[in-house]
Length: 177
Image (tube, rainbow, N blue to C red):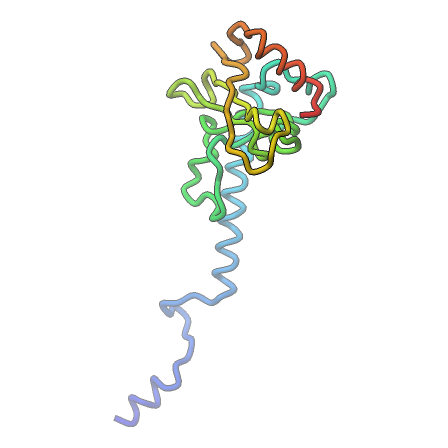
């Protein structure tokens, strides 16, 4: 009996034990993170090749030579994206940096939303909505009122704009909103 206790106590790490050392776990996590980031980068490249330039209607970014980014329609959230489904090309759209995240009327600024119109997601036609409360610089904290600023019939091909849409798009093309 005393021999059994001395063999097992105190517990010692042995090669082939059922647990891994903390250093090994860190290396595995880093490899998984790198693999996930590489996959997402490749998906974004596919989307930039698919779209070519900013999909926002009559955007002034080409005139100003602004950089392009791939925007997620479904946000990854605070926990990242373990399933890696939010980085699929159907959930990504090419927008210029101001329409993606730099201006108040942007996806990250919560003043712009993109709605896919078909089951193809962002690979098919989309509708673009702006928050009129943000657009008119109204009271902070007011509930958003969405206005459809443009609707694609196919990628980069839009339905005719109403006079109201055309007026607002001219303001947005100045890249100040």
